[in-house]
Length: 207
Image (cartoon, rainbow, N blue to C red):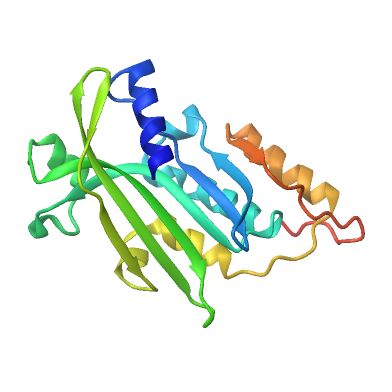
């Protein structure tokens, strides 16, 4: 969370109010960082729902190519202290001036537990703008649950969980290049911290 807050502050310093941190996904294998992918400006300009297929492709690649067994998702959104807003469009409520709804930076971590079910931890840090170049942070909220409300209400988190529960088969060099090329063509940014496990004898078309 701290690194995300620093990134947000620097983004505001450089670009001013209104610039959001791009959707960022971090893949882990047994607590070892293996890869990180972010959506580019064009993808971030899409409506949130239109990003779903791309998020699905990213998390599938992280699982099947990089063998990630847990995923972290960093994104901006809205948080409410008013129970009456549950299930409603918080963006619209915030725009209408409801002071109980604030912008926030959220970090979500999903892993599969010993029972083969997804566990989800979400930390959200509300913020406001002090001025055009500075952000003020407020008390964080913390939520931890299994296949409960947070998964049902969050399609991106549900997609992460779904792909983590899938098999991670052997991948050929051709599959690897095709999958990454497809993501790069959609403006995704990739950082590899460990080389993927390539099996040239693997059948094509797994991704």
